[in-house]
Structure formats: structure tokens, C-alpha cells
Length: 177
Image 1: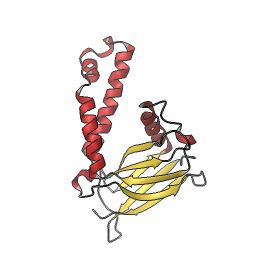
Image 2 (image 1 turned 180 degrees about the vertical axis):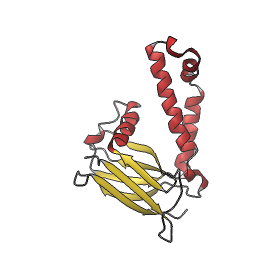
Image 3 (image 1 turned 90 degrees about the horizontal axis):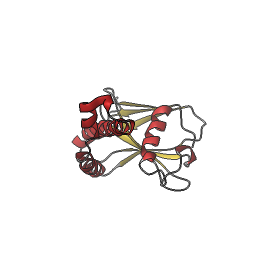
């Protein structure tokens, strides 16, 4: 797979006007050539219903995803060029939020770091930073607009091929919510 330098996803309403809605949450499914698929999320829209994703965002999100199962995933670059951009449905959101609620309930690294700061060892600081990132990502899922919709199942918005022929990918998506 050749990751684009930049991706823009503009949402439109049924009247084909820009959908001025922030916090629309989308994900990108990649398809592995070996091992398991890598899911890239979360990416959220701004106040104008525009999602802007850079190649650095894609790599950072992929690295984070892979870090939870190093032996289970290949690199994002080794994936097939086919991708699927999807709108997170409420069933998947509930499953994600339930899982991370239980995981984060047992974590105390960030509280310890906030209390003791740099007096903690390197490993404790790193664990606190990981927890902080997990909580920030969790908040994006928890506050996304998708949860206010009646869309239960993930909704495929775009199927495309990222084969390196275009540095910038611009998508127009009609969404009735």
C-alpha cells in the first residue's frame, strides 16, 4: 500500500449541501497481505463536516494500533492497496466503549504521574503517557456525533485503492443522518 500524503472527506446532506457537522467519526479498514487487517481510527470531522487526514496521521494511527499486537500485524505499507472508509455505527461504538471503559477503569498510571511527576521512573512515565493517549482517543469515540444517530451498523462510505498514483485523495460523501 502507498499511503496518500493527504486525504479529505467532505460530507454532504441529501440536498447536496455541505453537512456542517463536527465530530462525525470515520475509520479506515486496510486489508492485510498476511497476518491481520489494520483498522485506522478515529478520524473526526471539523465544524464544516470535513475530515482531513495526513500521511503522518495514518502512520501514527497504524503504529498505535499495531502496538497492541506486534505479532498479529504486518506493517501498514505491506497491506493490500484496497481500503474501505466507514462511518462508525452504534453497535461498534458500544462494543469499543464498553471494552475501553473496563480497561481504563483499572489504569492508574496517569494519576500517579500527575501526582508524582518526573520523580517516577522512565517506565512509569511512558505508561502514563500511553494511558493519557488512550483516554484522549476514548474521548473522541465517547463524544462523537455518530452516537446521536440511529445508524446501528458500520456504514461503508468509500471503497478505493491507494496505489500511489495520487498524492491527495479527495472524497465527497453524501450522508443522511
